Length: 405
Image (cartoon, rainbow, N blue to C red; front, side, top):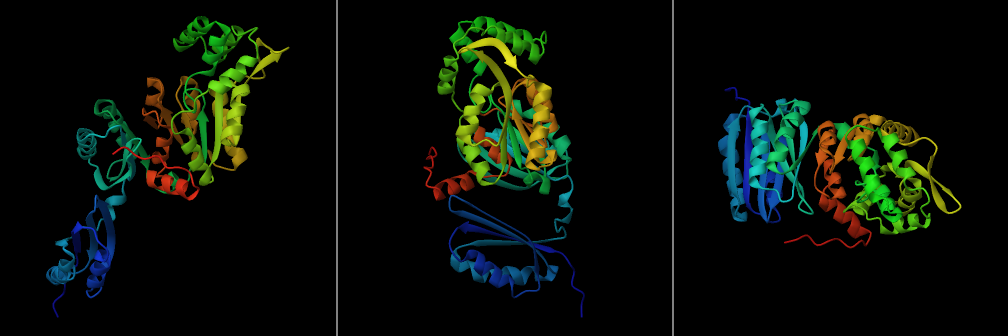
């Protein structure tokens, strides 16, 4: 008996999606001596593309093609069968998940990203859309290039392409994140609380001047915070009520928190702001852990002093480690999100550091950066799709927003 040549067969089925296609395909394949190595299916606007990689003898190409034509032609499906030697086993090297977010997502951006991946020896094994609003988000599975190198190469292109790109190493670690720690001002909420208080105290310009000095490196965070708080001396403490009332959450913040809580994540906030404001956020959103500074209030007025140690850049990183210990979560399974220089240590210490609408120095230092204003877009970086979020909301009777057409 002649020896049959081993190899692979790639079956590609295309056409208008309808019930019974997958069943007919595999019932037909079951009559031949082949094994399934890989399966991929996608439906876009009712159009099906189904691919199956089989291990089998090359001599089976013709009979498999004929059998599939007989089974699928009545369903108006087109079939291609191609023989080859590659079983895809070598694709695991240097595996990455690349998440691309655009608002909107243009073909030129996808072309640029695909070009960078190809130029440095990477291969795109799979692409799937995970959201179409408020941003369009697609996830690429890439092999053949080290994730750290890929992140560096793509970071140089994102500004030019007008998209956000996040690169994460594939594997179980990506799905193991269990504690998310957020900065508050300009991250969880819009604006800066101390600036809102300064407006009530009539010293907005003076507080702004101190902030500018700190940004130029003339003052560290603790010095600048104490200097700004001194300018608030004498302010009626009822102004804190007004600030709490006027505080606006970042777009998508409630969806972000609600979704992670469903998945049993622990959530924490760390702030260079004040407990008199963050305590209300903890109660409102169901935050598990919090660290912030405390304004001294005597006889109903701010004294211009702080109580206790200042939560500064180092203090935020220490808080992340403390919260991880309390939650029983390794630091490698934490996510930190922030926008300012005093978040840098926290972002570096976390398993995944995300710069959210951040200063350039923070974007460059973080593992990944988002420039879209929607906090719930971070969920896509964690592998959670918009459809999954909406399905969970619908089950709880929460109104699902209608996407633009």
